[in-house]
Figure 1 (spheres, rainbow, N blue to C red):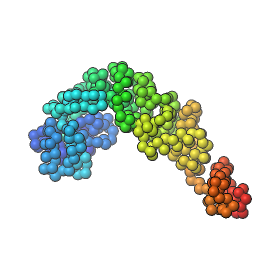
Figure 2: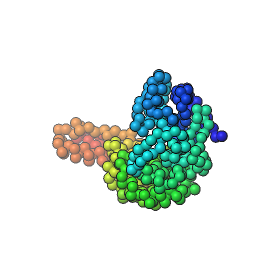
Figure 3: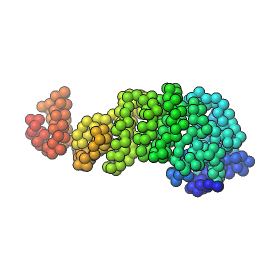
Length: 387
């Protein structure tokens, strides 16, 4: 039997949550991402435990054991149990009674087999007991070993239950799939046939999935799949992924870490802030990356900072299929460290109001264009002032 050995599973905090349920006579299994990622040797971020104990019972047991318990999704069977500061999402076995493509009405179930059949992909329907022994009621282990993203049982049915699963398919392919093997044909056909259902999803849910996908080491094959099925144009009209693969290659060549906003900028398209419900901060950075592509390395570095200037450099190069000039990277980093030596007060009283602003802008641009070589005295002389 397959068994996982993981620090999070063996930790006292998690074992106490297991014991809370098992000692009361209930079933308890770790499930989903924590099991999947442990089997792949990847870091585990969240711990999900599933049980046949009803949520009210989980709350009572947690309080009796001295844990902090929060009914975070109690209507859907989920209670967050905090053990030694570590949150554990404890959810009762359940199955879908009714779905509308966005949300589901659920009923509680008694076995992991029922619970497994309501999940999305086979690799997410893996369960592990408190000793790490893996239960595989759907047959997800072979798919996980092959890095194959496959819907559980009937792909069209899984998609109609929640149309976000079409986006999750591509996100999971970017993070876990074998791009050399391509996409599961049944999944691709089902996604293409249900593109219209994406219109029912909230912009927030779409945006969250897109940003998670673009943060993957190489999202280009997955995004190409989104384009070929019509998903890309459905959720982000006007975007074009032709520069994405060259961008990923250039990121590696210059040592830049994956960055979802940089990749989003490569897709182009207008209205992404509202279309994906980007935060003001992310929308501003996306705009700055695009601005940087039209600036010299020195101006971008000085005005927007080294990080954004480098984003602009690799994006501009990817857009035209060229390499990145390493000297330009040096220029951008050097520029980011510069400080304009003139202050408005230096030009008073000879200049004031709009004239003062225009002269400051003129001198600053000349200073940037000179490679920051014009001295303060020379700048003041240009303005008719003595140094």
